[in-house]
Length: 92
Length: 460
Picture 1 (tube, each protein chain N blue to C red):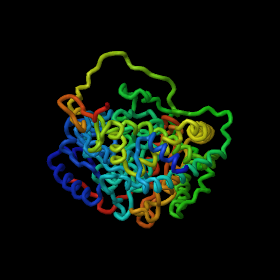
Picture 2: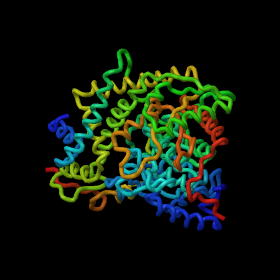
Picture 3: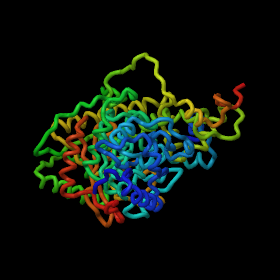
Picture 4: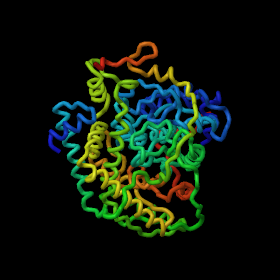
């Protein structure tokens, strides 16, 4: 993968890499992609893809109200807040 | 050794707590060791009354931190407990604390933890394995008789093997994942590491079964139990994997032991063997890139201090919060899912996954269990002198196929060579945990989990 592709991928993944990280991680990514390329050697003609080995059907829950009484602990984990609102930098 | 009441009975509690504190200082098993906090909500009776256990720090326990070994979650406190933890507490067990791990479960040495270094109780210069290394070390050191881990590609079995204890990776869906921080959802399952087969079995029986909080959890439908002489298959392709002589010898000795116990050893074939690692890493990283997208610095976790807009805040928070291995896997996963590359990588890996499942179906038409090594080398030294991150990934070859096929597997201590434990594993058809446990119990009679140096004699 060239540096341009790597930096496009990093941007999509919301990661900002320094030039030394680009070099180090780029090498590791390349090594893995090389390894992935061996997958070409196996014949997969006619095989359906497996997303989950054992999941058979979609299951839904009852459309009923539930309470979980965890809002205070959840809010306490927020990095910045004002009363019960979570603060973020200005969007506009 | 009887562990009942260890964490609760007055005459045992203090001796145990002092031992745990001291051993943990030497080995770094726990990120948070707090049995007093762990007793909250535990009842005083039940099959595991007063038995302390460790919980890998990617599994939620109300009131404890849930760091995943990452800077991005260093201060996060769990609002609720995982279903497995609730169920074990109802059986009387007590959470001793949260154990160290490779960041988000990504690694084979626990050296990818951003927060703590964990040592192998057999030799403190060596790694405990990973990613559930803290749990394995805590069990092997005798701080707890069992501990929870998660197994995405071998993360329960490999550290159990490195530390000389048992490691059960259940059938995918047999145990609720509610409260487990997601890494690769289609592969991972909560498992247990234990000093004895009996503790692994008890913990598994309490944890398993469908959970309304996890819609991918499956009802417990045990595979028909077979007794007596078993047919055990060893993949022919194992011989082609470069293995340390100690591991090769242990594989041979285990086959002789099983034959002595009256079982039949047969050769089976896995034509997909060479491709399991590639297929595994494509799928695992793809799922990781999606699952870890939730860490954005907005509602919880690390937030970068100086950012002018939400996009920059997200970018800097993730960049500062994640370690190198996590970044590598997110990058890889993002890449293999990019339009234009999906067919070449992700789709192809999923088709290979189908071929791997078919290999297992064919094998289990002829044999009851499959026997394999857990890892090609004995516990390696800390600091990466004899094992780099790339070769550690290739070394997942024996463990990750069970995850791709969703099948249960259990590792067991099989030898001590040059002062280091070496493990082997059985793999079984879906929901045949009963058979795995029975086979391990037979092996345990001949070769119980060896005591690591400093293992306690008791608490009274």
